[in-house]
Length: 357
Image (cartoon, rainbow, N blue to C red; front, side, top):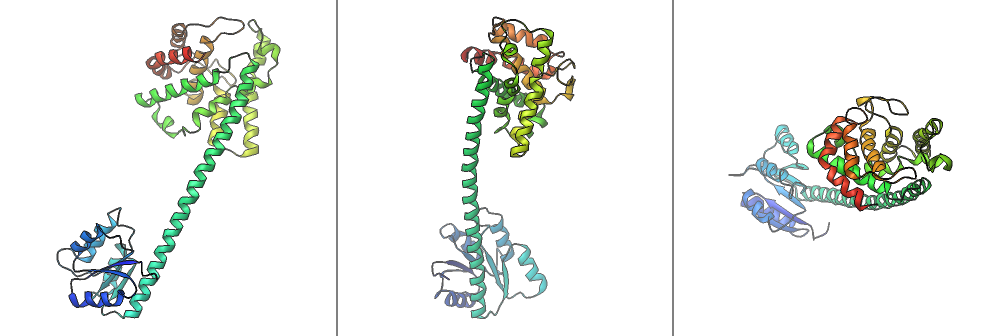
């Protein structure tokens, strides 16, 4: 092994300590100390590659010393070999259970001691290299994941923009929707509303997946999508199919690329954002808590933005008017608890609506 490796030898017996020093010094950078207390003082200055530790010592014995080492995040990974006059199965077992990598008996044979040291230093080096390799792989994985996520977001922005351009909106609807959702979620966390569900969401994907909530509109004809007057009953039935058309498109994505949190969230956003708390929504007439929380959140954000946005067939409502309509829908169209959360952040909704037209 390299002479650069550092070893601290701890033994209160001067004869044993001198013997260890003479054996180790030709091969390793050696630091002999006569007590565990001196070892801990030395550890503040020297980071050893291995510690040779006696068991029977005054004040702090070897077992107590290794407990202190293993409970310290700075020292816990330093390999420790017990070199002790205490022989016996129980003593050895105790030492190994406390975290020692080896347990050798005095009097020791120099060549065997050196071989044991060499083996454990080699194992420690391999462990260090594997740790560095794993960290490198993790760093590269994070970089690659960010690249994929960035590409995915870019593609989504393009697709979402195509949908928005088809129904005559300005391109800011999806941006505002994400702002509203972030605002609601932050307030829900602060108010401890539906904590178990919100804590389970992966926020790296949750809000951004909302961009696909209206993707099904891309399959709706222009005559209906851009009609400058209110839709007839039949036309409205066609428009309502955009939720299932969007869900079908996202399901096809999952078949092609595999399931993911992102697409799972997107599917629920697309399929349930027009359900109503009273069961009068579509496509499945889900009622109350049967509607996924994702859909109940999007219902508030989507309706609010539709109200404050100009359409070919209507002028925009003011933020105050839109907020009152949301409140009037408490317990009928919307989840009452989410409307209560909305009440606390309605001013922020207004700011988002007015600054992102």
